[in-house]
Length: 330
Ligand code: ASP
Image 1: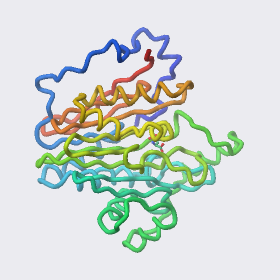
Image 2 (image 1 turned 90 degrees about the horizontal axis):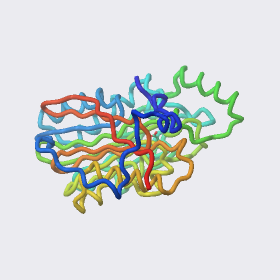
Image 3 (image 1 turned 30 degrees about the horizontal axis):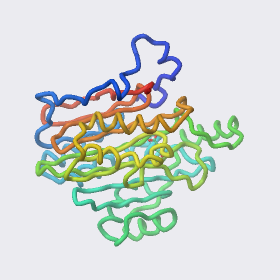
């Protein structure tokens, strides 16, 4: 499975004639809508190549005329429950104290939303987030309270730290002097957006966050407006990458807002990436990507580095698509 390790470092990219920086915003015109670009009928997109598997699960719901909300919950659950995936749910890399702490959120076509953060020992945080949305007057529960709620709702406690993740963490402890860093390799998320046969859009986002983070650190992924935002009049967006940078620009919500103002999802994602890059001097470790879907079924994806890709599934296609990437802006 291709991971963040597959990201090519900025220096390597800069010296490659194959991977030239794309035009700056001021030079580029709005992306034209290609004639057959609309994805009619149900469509689901999700981040990274694990999205293929997640989309396949979501597709079962969409195909049988289920809701986009059910589809995005069921889709990402598959990845949460995969012990081989070290950035989400079971098998996720722990914080620097060896605790696996999970963040997730979900949002439907009526702007209903639910989230959990710093949740431990529960395999499927996305479903706990859904219960927060469906069963409580709140939007977000964290830590012990989130776990208590999950247990009351019938979720089971489980050790999420796999042997592989524990061994890697022990190795990290030896080298790191117990110092958390923003690194380019040890994190990921699955974010998913789906439009069902009724044209309703929902989204989900789930992660174990930045590996070896400080105890209690929460990234963008459970934060509505940062890791995920949906407005059914317009479309939805989800994010992956360094959560701190994504939160600072309210990433997913600005992408949706730009689409509301007429931008193509691609241009909106590009602009969000540009805004993040404009606020950071050290781009070496800045991996942020956005994936957006609008009401016409058009999709856009953009990231700071090459390597970000998303999976799309419609009636006619099932594929992995490389995102646009931005290396330099004026
Ligand atoms: N966005 C996640 C976080 O910051 C990690 C990632 O997507 O790589 O927790």
